[in-house]
Image 1 (cartoon, rainbow, N blue to C red):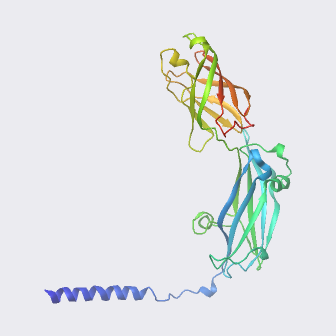
Image 2: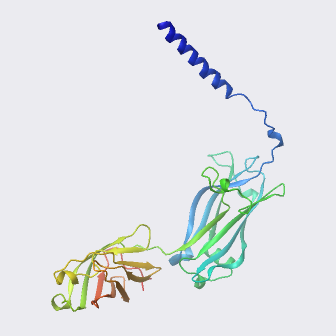
Image 3: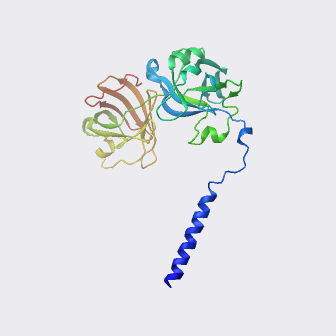
Length: 314
């Protein structure tokens, strides 16, 4: 019995060894006849958005790695081109200009050795000001939700050109390659209104009664919905239903569209809510609220210590 087990073990070991040996057999592939290309692996996306509220400090910045048969040494130039894009309601995408324009060119000398790989790498930065000027616009012509399309064009010493129009899907999007040659940079409007605030609701009006003197003071909690600029509020009636011996529930929320505030959603009775901006200071945000029943109030929300209301609210 022991002999059988030993023989079986020896046979299994030999099979594994023989299988392993086959992995080292060099296949008859004519590597010398292959024509190899080049691509730009994205190593770091340092900055890929423009802040609508701070265009002066906004930038597009990447680190790219030149991958070719000479470890990046075939690269001659990399053109960085750009165009502005806007979605126009009822029309579609509008591009300015129609075709992208040159904003910067990297030379072979910009690609340098690094300690992490054998391929040469280059860092580059395009400021929002450079991009806006290149497409022939000014800051006044930029809106939140716009985008700038940056396209890279690699030219090598053999006269070949590589860009988004001839890159394969796998090289463009697979994690190992990550070489899309094209990068959309969105103009975003950062919003940070989440929190719990003290408020006072005055001038309440309702056919079902109001709080004493038409005024209510309490706390309101605004909760950010995912990564959006939308915030559900803990009580869309700002205390009114409580004074009517009722309890609010619903999905009423305040949205911040590049500083323009709006309210939407309904309560448990399906009554829709809306708001009208009145004024804003660093300390106090004031707006009116109306619902489908005709309930009305003026709401004054105090900012928290160290977190003033943004000057862009309107």
